[in-house]
Length: 420
Image (tube, rainbow, N blue to C red; front, top):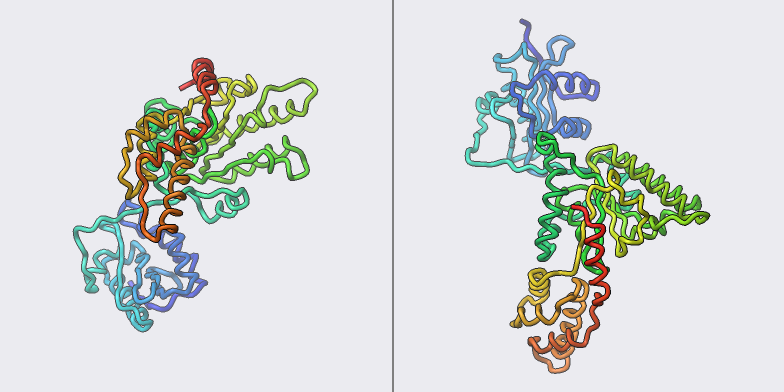
């Protein structure tokens, strides 16, 4: 077998290096750095070398420089040229070029037994034991990022699910019926469970339906897109056409949680001769198409589930119809604790006094007290602190969002419409 020559990578080598990389692995574990990382390093003119025998590329070593550190992204070898010292020679040539650029620390991450592991050891690299590699793969690719931006969507920050205070019953139901089948779809399929594609959240205003929808997207790590009926009609083609166009755009996203708040605006009972017939028909058609692909969830929220068109809630369109009511005592306790940082207050007394308050009501009361105490500190020149009576006075003077009639109607809606 003739010898090899090592030289700098040139763009004309790209196809050969990619082809070589496909035949190089010696383990079934996927590499830490993806093919896209390697190609980006090559096209970005980070130091890389190739070994050639005649006109054939038989080896490659690719790096990426981050200030004074360099990562070796790939060591690829032709299977016929293993065990001859080629890997060590490639690393030596690559190291020479990196040191010339001021790199002081060279690092590599390889699966156990992968091509290049022995060459790294032979080249003086030290394997560090006791290190666990952590990885989180995003659900938005560069290809879909532009689509998501056009739709006004984004991936919600991690941790929103944990920030939903209390509401244990609702969280448990949503976690088990919605989140788990979608996040563990393979295991779900083994048990014959079909992940949900569309759900309705109903309940009085201000009870946190939007918060739950965003928290579901955060829990899944999926993009969140909210559709606003008023914007759908602003394209000049009418609301029905706008609905069709927006749902059509969703097909370009691999994963997405689509949210429609106050869906009764576009899905109220159809009245013959009114424009609502075409709008509801288009929405129903769009939901059918939306359900055909995995990796997507439609969440519709409504304050008035009884006003929705009968066909809208039919089995086969929505998997679950879930009630979201006023925060219970546990949830109110967690809500008050969120706003009482550093204050010595009788929280159970506030919980009892705020029965029937929504999360928005609790937030408003806390802001009112905070403003009053802030003004006290300004006026006195000292640091004022809120007392339990300050909060009770504000709570007693507020008119809660939820009235007894609204709560009675919600109880009847649960009996008539809830499906979990």
